[in-house]
Amino acid sequence: MFATERLRNHNMFKSSVIVLAHPDDEVLWFSSILDKAGSMVFCFLGCDSKPHWSAARRNVLSEHPVRNISSLDLDESGAFNAADWLNPVVTKYGLALSNNAISEKYEGNYQKIKQGLKEKLIGCSNVFTHNPWGEYGNEEHVQVYRAVKELQEEIKFSVWFPNYCSNHSVNLMLPYIAGYDCDYVTLQTNSSLKDRIRNLYITNNCWTWYNDWKWFREESFMKDRYDISDLSSETSHKKRALRHKDDMAYGHLFPLNFMRVDICSRSTAKSRLSNVRKAMTYIRRRLG
Image (cartoon, rainbow, N blue to C red; front, side, top):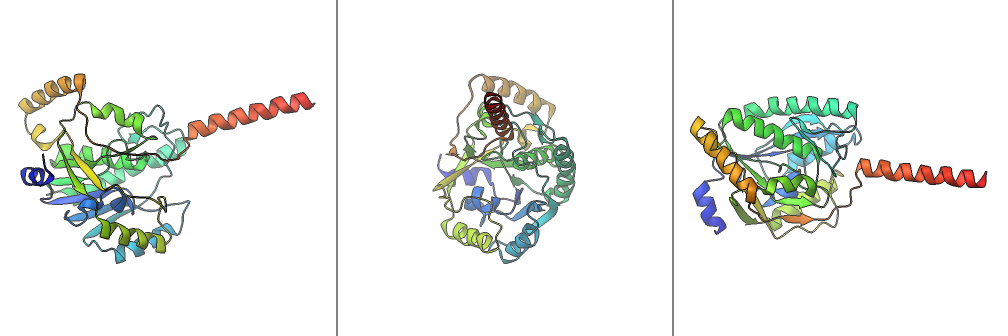
């Protein structure tokens, strides 16, 4: 079905908001709808490992070509790449992490995100946010999705997410391809906005992605199968369970913007370091 027909049928931008983990996520994964959604909310501005980011990001948002922007003004937890992406474990807070100290801050942020978003999402009909596998594989993207989903149960709005995936996040993505109804809209990425916004981040030294990144020509947005129409009554809960059971048996593929990223997981890095240490020990013994 053509995108225009989907838009008309779903009225997907009525009372809509884009909920994002970090500044620059909007132009990477949501450029096609930046001039269509009603507002944007960013969760994180500060980052302990990048002290200048908070002020730099505030400066970008003050000059941003898209208006009606707000922020929860949270600090990142440092969770990036702390999950086991080869065997990811989904939790209420996002993903299970390997570092206890980071996990504590990560879980604390979940509560802050949920609390901060609640008042901003009341009255919304459509919420666009990160996908369940965090696009290329970002723990805080997954966390924001989980928080939005929990609020959906309470506030009752439709959830939409983009179709980006990578070699890093594919293991988490695979379980989700079963059970979707191919209910999606495909739009052209916004050429004029993406270049202008990227340059703002680069100028302010807070661009977090590849400098030579080439955008896809199109991106799609999936309507989350657990929608407000499925949350309205006990009968629809039963229908949902039956449909979910059938769909899980066969599944429906949806279009993916698949990319390759070079991210060495901490578990892989730890394994490589262990192998290096073993090799060094062997060499010492041979030389000794």
